[in-house]
Length: 222
Image (tube, helix red, strand yellow):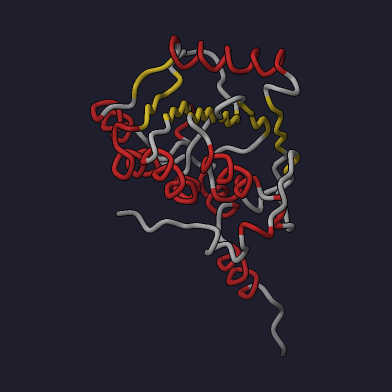
């Protein structure tokens, strides 16, 4: 089984993070998107995620809560991209290994069109809510990266919620391909580590790793 990363690893109690509709990340852990997402995952009957890429570090942060949601009968759908190879095969293998076919996992599959959405949709008994912003699924994007995300509900703004949700449904049902074992194997064989991955890995480093790097470059006495 995977070694889950969680709130404990991030050195903050979930109760310390206030509920907020505007999340800005950065140094204030209370503004991490992560804490709002796991609260929503823990209550939702259905979870729909659409992001342009998945990284293993971000998947690890959400695995525990997604697994618990599936165990209580929630439906989970994830639509992601394979453009430029930013989505890591290891992230997809992790989802498939730990959550199996209980998650409907798909690639956006329309050539010649960019795919850059970042949105998390949660459906509850009497309403739904949607997070819209800049965060893909990576450790940095869910925690200390400077990412701006906003949440609103179908109760407060039903017209615009419906626009986003209908668009998600259309993309998921008509412009996607299921990531089954054959598709994942083919993607893995053709995948090459992108040049941008070096920078993404650096941004995605944990705070502990950041401290180690900073120490290496501290001025030394004569």
